[in-house]
Image (cartoon, rainbow over all chains, first blue to last red; front, side, top):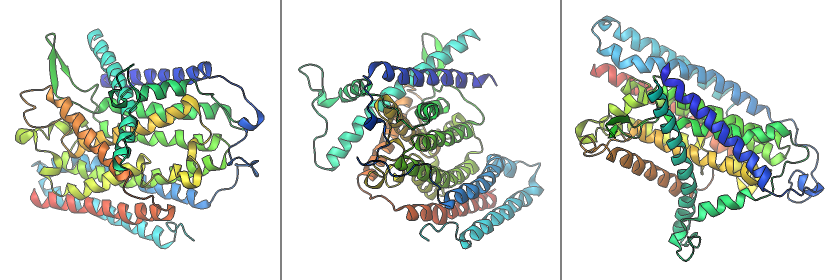
Length: 127
Length: 344
């Protein structure tokens, strides 16, 4: 756990740096706000409507599909990290194909999921 | 213990200083490379007094100019989120670099110093996690500015980054199958055989397609052309940082270039042997030099791609990510694990 102390250091220093930069630009730059300057930029014309509009549901669907696949990807990481070690050790020699096969079944399930999402048209953006 | 803490602190500060300088000069490099590709000269005026120094002082001048620019917060923006967003994308970008090894170890004043800030047994996951956190800054910037271009840029960016993160993560799984550890220091040490040329990509030819997938996905993760849809200037003005000015804008730029440097360093670490190279075992100080050269070569490649390849359309981008890169990454895992099983 001791090795994580530098993470704390760099977190503190990086946050400090970011705040110094923000404060510095606030102090150094001149500030003469006018109504036009504070308007949302819309190529020079008066803004039409609000930016808090409803968005396409596709973004939400993509986020959801991403969550599912990402959890599966995370599941693969520990398996991959010990894969060669297990295959080379004598203790687990008889379990080699189980170790390999189970993950292959999992990958097939993952693939079927991808094909399902694909067929459902969630990945089509031009419809 | 105090010595160790002091060493960590000094290394962290040195790394930060190097990173900030590197970012400044990568921007200059980008402008120079762009200029050469387009048969121009590029910035060549700013020097020290009478000496022009090929424009080497340009980043300094740019930085000074940006500090004194007016700092505008749009009237209807969500103030705190608007201010926090650039920090949220800069801080994770700065933090990733501490687990990446840039040399073996050198002896200074009878003290052996390992050339990496720290090592952790989940180093690779740490880098992946921080790159994911970087999305928040962009999404919040897009949403809080209360500008339609920013909002679209932020949304596009988040959808793009999470789509390509899958391919990125799965291609890293493929490297893990061979490396067998998540500790970046161990991954690099394992590549030091054969006069420092036992790089993963030479040792395991099956990693070549994985490298291509990883590189494409990391270009998309860092929002580089041909995947720079979030800030497609011809349709979205400047994307998620349309409303940002002064140093807040600089922070987004810094984060972007830091991500480019981190992505190149990760590619170097995972595929090109990190700091390994000929005769690095006898002359350890060559380590950082090799590392830097490899990272610079990969950054140059990204720039070359940027000025050669046109931008994707959004549906093409999503189709490519989900229907080509993701299945390709899964197939690569299956092939690699089968080959390892048959060889054992």
